[in-house]
Image 1 (tube, rainbow, N blue to C red):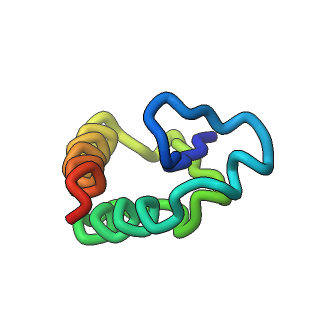
Image 2: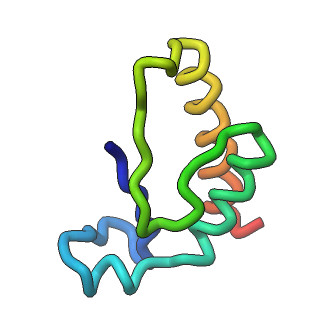
Image 3: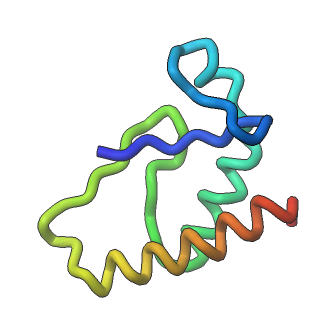
Length: 79
């Protein structure tokens, strides 16, 4: 199970509900849409969990990592 939060300051941790709800939902939305464009379907909210299952092959995981790298780059540049 994986949770993904975008924070507003580098190094900030999410350890409780207040910190989670203070996250950057717009950054998550940009990340989500790039992942979707790359063919990777993740939970549409940073308040939902994602799962890796036995059906995910090494190739699928490698493509997901590549898509995430692209999505993180888009988010970091604010594009």
